[in-house]
Image 1 (tube, rainbow, N blue to C red):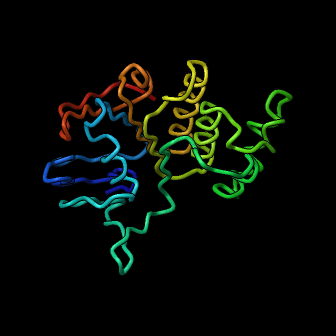
Image 2 (image 1 turned 120 degrees about the vertical axis):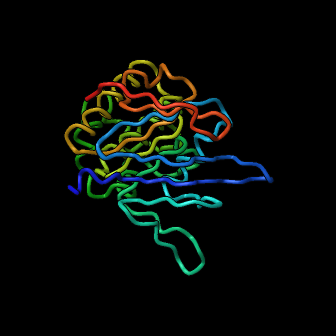
Length: 223
């Protein structure tokens, strides 16, 4: 089989149990390369849990997850060694003390110059380059986090609560950047949201979660 036809993720009989209850229960699902997926559901439906499993941040209670046809490697203590090819955005950099320049150098050293040129060279934005991240608004921190994720050039970009701290203009701008990232770099992008309208025009495949189950899957002709 052609490599591009091999699913980037394969899930089978995935379960996450917390406090004696199933927080997540997925029988079988595949995520394919170069596709934008949306995970939609109310708070508590299992969206973040699913993304944490895909990002290698959480081990399921039972079941099998394959990333590029292999299970995640683990340390001798059982901790997952998250592949560098997966980039996970969860939160808005709360608590980070360094400057914007220091943040980009730390998380995307190979892309720092490109990020500065593309996003912080205009007269409007150049002053932010040496500003402390904690002095930025929540929207500005969310924007910086997305910039780093898009420019990291990973195989998979996972974004929890997409657009929650962005205004309408920024969300439209980043939606176009996400589409371009998939189109020209072949990145697989997985977004979660509580509101379908946030990603309706963006995703090619949408999974609707309800109480930890995939209630339905909808496809759209995108990209």
